[in-house]
Length: 156
Image 1 (tube, rainbow, N blue to C red):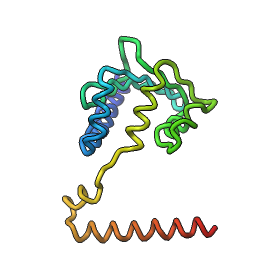
Image 2: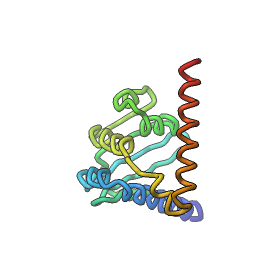
Image 3: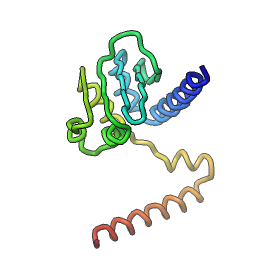
């Protein structure tokens, strides 16, 4: 029972974070709404974990149990699944030997695309908390560091 309560709390917090992030990008919200009614089952092998993503309207709902048959089922290790979600190459990671996809692969592709194309103005959001001048200083510093690392990478 305590483990189930912890699971519910984690799922609720994660669901809230996902939906709050989606609210910051209206294009992604519209794309999610086109998938309304779809259910994705994620089976993580390492660590052993099963999550159901149910899409309803503009929101994603997470749960550890689903009565019906999901539209898509993806199975793999946590490392492979994270690589699949955050990969720039939309096709390569779907065909990894340690990733198994059953059902509607197009649902998985569309969700991957939505995650990849999230366009959130973090500077605008940060400026509400710390002000415009500190935000500008942080942004300038991060951009400078990014350029330095990029140049160093190219040199190496």
